[in-house]
Image 1 (tube, rainbow, N blue to C red):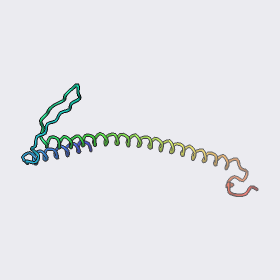
Image 2: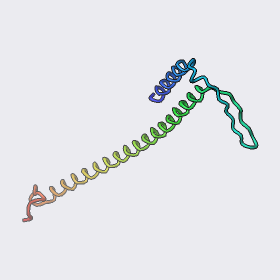
Image 3: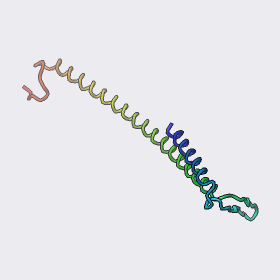
Length: 123
């Protein structure tokens, strides 16, 4: 849900940026883009300054979303591991407490004094 809200905010920002910069002269300069790979030529493409600015903004948002999603997945995995470890430790604690209670009850029933404490000196 958080990512959907972020995408909507980005789309609103892009929409208002297009409206704001559509008629400003500073953003209406044209550029020629091309990539020459010696064997293969990509372009030339004529584009405006605003297209470069907005595409860089959208590319940055996409990269941030990808890193955020990876971090969220990692945090969820760590949370599950820690939850599993807590359950294991709680189970072990309950086993140990049950074991100590059974040992204490067998000690009380087998001792000749009946209710002697482990902290009292032997008689």
